[in-house]
Length: 231
Image (cartoon, rainbow, N blue to C red; front, side, top):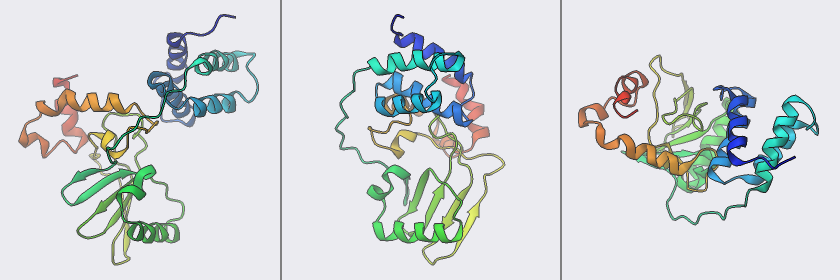
C-alpha cells in the first residue's frame, strides 16, 4: 500500500470530524489534524491514534486511522521553538493564562492557596485557564470548551476564589463572553492549536475595530454582528 500523503490524511480527518469538534472523539481527531498542519506533537498524535484503533487497523474506522498513522509516522519531528515570549494576556490589573503555564504567570503562594480551596470546595470542577487580578489577588478558574477550536473561544462556567477565602461560581452569561488573541494565553510551544495561525487571525481584524467597538467585542452577539467585515 502506498504511503498516505499529508493532504490525504487531512481529508480523512476532516471527513471523520465532520464539523463536530465538541465530542470526545472529535476533539482527539482535531488535535491530530492540528499536529499534521503544524508539524508539532507527533508522538502524542501517534499514541492517540493507536489508542483509538485499539490494535485494529483492518476494517472501517480502524483502516482510516491506519492511513492517518502512515502519514503521521513519516513526519519529521520538528525542533521545539525557543521563545522568550511569556504566556499570559495582560488586561488592566488582570492576567489571563492557560493552566499549562499558570505557575509561570502567577505567584506560587497565591495560586497554591486558590487551588487548595478549589479542590476542597468544588472537587469536580475542571478548568482550562486562570485569571489573576494582581490588585486584589483574586483568582478565577475558567473553563472554555472551545479554547482549542474557536478563534474567539467562549467563556463557560467559572469559579472565583477571592483573597479573603470566599468563593462563588460564575455561570456562563446568556450573551456569552468571548476571548480574543488566545495565543497570548500560551507560549509558542503550545500544541492544542496552531499558535502562528492564531497570531495571523489577530492581525486580520485588530486594526479594523473602532475604539468604541472595542468596548463591546467581549460579547459574542456584538462580535458576530461585526466580524463579517473581515471574514
